[in-house]
Image 1: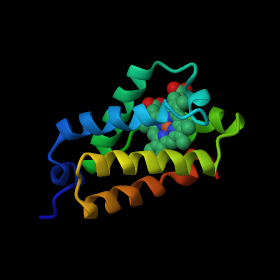
Image 2: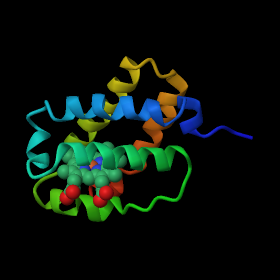
Image 3: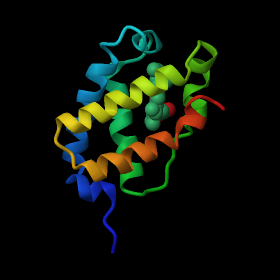
Image 4: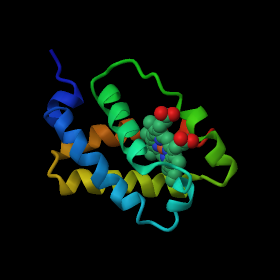
Length: 120
Ligand code: HEM
């Protein structure tokens, strides 16, 4: 049986390291931080942990990313913000020594969310 990305990563504890490292970079970027001004940062980290645990574990996705980001698109969210966010996730994975092949798979998944996140 093929292992899920969650299993390949080594379980939820690894996601709990990746997500705060990733948001530390996002929240430090002056081009991205305005989108998070009204957001509770801890709640956002928890939402992303739950989201990644679900998609990496190949569970049904209960979140509609189009709805979640619609307001942000009206405020100017575009490909440049998506690309930066994606690169920060990749950097966090590299810094946590995640295997290259797993990083490539995760980047494919992130890319597959672009149309919904940016309401294309
Ligand atoms: C790269 C792909 C992205 C994924 C997979 C993603 C995923 C998510 C998820 C799972 C949520 C929580 C949704 C919910 O529970 O309702 C969320 C919310 C949010 N995301 Fe993203 N996101 C992405 C890109 C971005 C980008 C580029 C930005 C802005 C720079 C952004 C800003 C936000 C904000 C501000 C919220 C909170 C919205 C609210 O609570 O009103 N996201 N995102």
